[in-house]
Image (tube, rainbow, N blue to C red; front, side):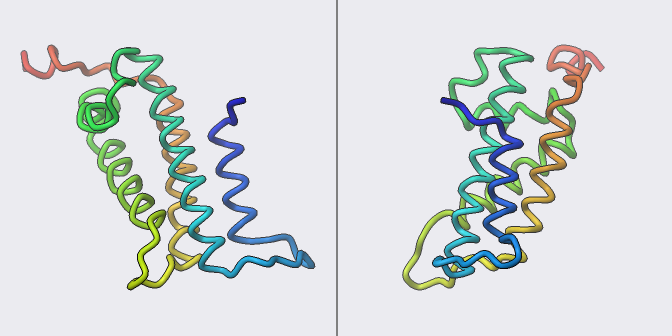
Length: 135
């Protein structure tokens, strides 16, 4: 069963800002970490969908799809993807010597992931590796 990236982002939003009157047994830090996991999953799925549309062989290795994104989706989108993915990855990992991520920080990442989903859903860039090399 596959869940859409938009559904994952919505679930992350509900973790960060529960409905009024909802009793939560999880602390804010734990909810923020769980939201970060959902947001990273949403970004990964959006990247897979993007590469499936552009060139399916690029979905095999995660590192390559992030490195090559600049050539296909543009510099700004690639930079934002790398930065957001790295920040979410750091927020997902539990370290005994660090505080959990702040809900406000993860909410900022939620807004960025929402924006990136829209950018990656758009038409793939018209520039390619060969056309950039010829210029």
